[in-house]
Length: 159
Image 1: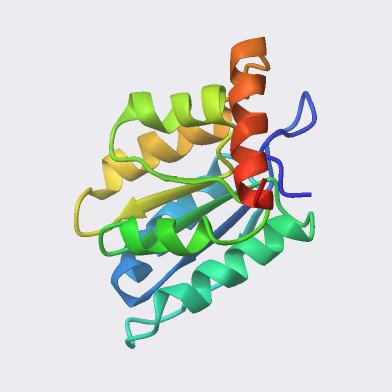
Image 2: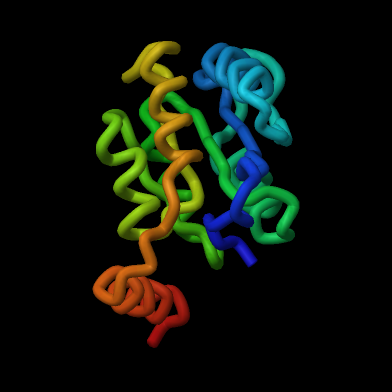
């Protein structure tokens, strides 16, 4: 399923996607991640031609749901729209992160599996830093965080 944890000793497989606003940043970030040894699945878009972010967010999330990637990074203009769309999909926990602390803490405490970035909010250098913080982080598994995560999963199930 779409958990963010990856097997010990290997880098997580990463799906990366964007809308037209995020295309330039996705191109840079995808190359950076490949250089760092990550296996990257690019779900598009592949140009600056206007597209609808929910379509590409859904593609990215399906890759996680199918188990072909462990984590996802979705880039749109603000990160907000993609985050809203991603969180509608079963098993997906997405967060907009524009600072280092939130990028790793969202995984450590909330088991977030999709990082949403705003290309009109942050630059390339910060995007690389946030992606690394997100991808290196692991869910702590502490009792209080497991308890809270179980409540979030129950909300998703409609309980």
